[in-house]
Image 1 (cartoon, rainbow, N blue to C red):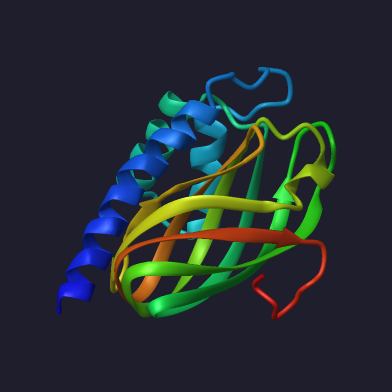
Image 2 (image 1 turned 30 degrees about the vertical axis):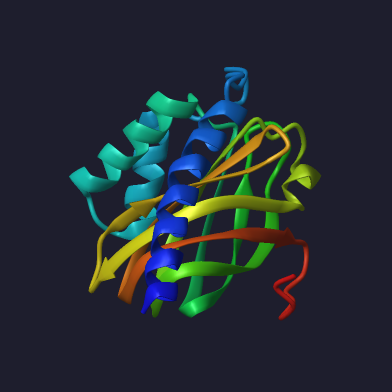
Length: 193
């Protein structure tokens, strides 16, 4: 029982540190050329998620107020599960105004005080993306999930100066907090490492 308590405390501390790290790494605002306005993102999210949701608009407004206007976004779906150690797999399309669109896949492991499984439609806001190939890397972050039948959740992942903010609307039951990464690839793979 003491090990579970220590793991929970460690996860909470890492969550607090990880959120500050993502904010610190995103200090330079993206250029306005080729970026997406909150209105464009909410309209796209409405079409993608299929509902007009005040919660979606609030999540997007929160992301834009923290990191500015993204210069790309990904629309896709993913699934994952965890019993302390977890895995997540997804696929979608990266959209940019100036560099074209590109099919992407992502996978990644996690560890923490986390349990359950979910399927989610995912909209990822991408900040400071210098070119579309720069999406292929490992984006580290902290995730806190509370999916119970539905709802929106937002996290922040970073690699170099690029920030990825997944906004998920999930179905399933997954509770907890974890640290992990998402690895973006040009082709689907089962290897999360």
